[in-house]
Amino acid sequence: MTTADRTETGFTEVELDLPVRYMDRSRAYYLTLGYGNPYRWAQHRDVPFTRITKPVSESRVALVSTASPYNPEAGDQGPWAPYNANAKFTNVYSMPVDPPPDVRISHVGYDRKHTSAEDINSYFPLARLQEAEREGRIGKLNERFYGVPTLRSQRLTNERDAPAVLEMCRADGIEAAILVAT
Amino acid sequence: MSLVARALEAAGIPTVMLGCARDIVEQAGVPRFLFSDFPLGNSCGKPFEPEMQRDIARMALDLLESARAPRTTVQTPFRWAEDAAWKRDFYRLDMTPDQIAKAKAEFDGQKAILNEKLQGG
Image (cartoon, rainbow over all chains, first blue to last red; front, side, top):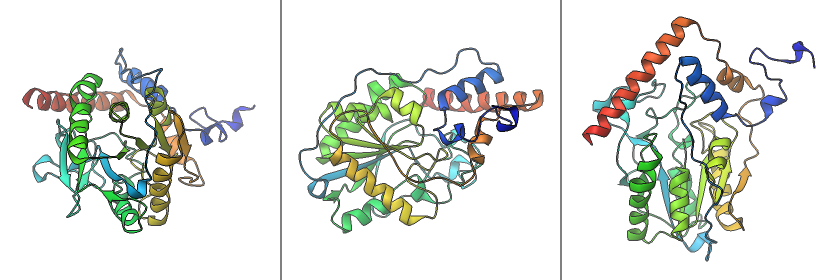
């Protein structure tokens, strides 16, 4: 391989067809900024599994999102907003899906150069799931969705937030869940 | 979000997760993962492309039913753009000392805001 095959970032075009290595890149970024103790992402050997027992077309399905309800007090929430920690929420919430909520993602680290968050459907698939419900592909889309905070704390997620979402799912009789990471 | 998927699944509720960060989600280990090789922020499809968004929603629902074991990843067939500019830009780390100082101040400031929120709430 010659240097001519490589881009300025050290990758060949073929390597750029592979999924982005977010953890490697993030570590390199924080080291560049001078932070010595980079974030460690969750790592598990074992993964739970529950086989679905009835068709989705007969199931009550919930949407779970990291998006944040628009708050006029919390500064620029986009589209095109820079990262905005003021727009973060710190506890699990639920909101009705009707009327459709105005939820944003300015509080999370998405790709601001190539993404604008102009179309809510690119990160919050409510309209697409409502279509699937009308077509009969989903038995019943739950009347409320659940919002999960992103706080860089696995302890809070495991000990506080995941149990809170589970409790809401049980209260609503949820039979399958669609979770959207940002 | 992977941790929430794991908790629901362990309690008997089947889950499917949509996302763009394959390495992070697969290291955490989730039951069913629908991966799109897009810039972060587009887990449900490209903006203003409802047909693609519909296909991705359908693939997620299909995956709920088709997975037979945990760690089932399905990749959607879509490409963000013919050119890989978004990945080249993302990997670029050639920052000037001024840019580094600015980025560090910004990060510390945002972190302080979050910590304040956590203390308060």
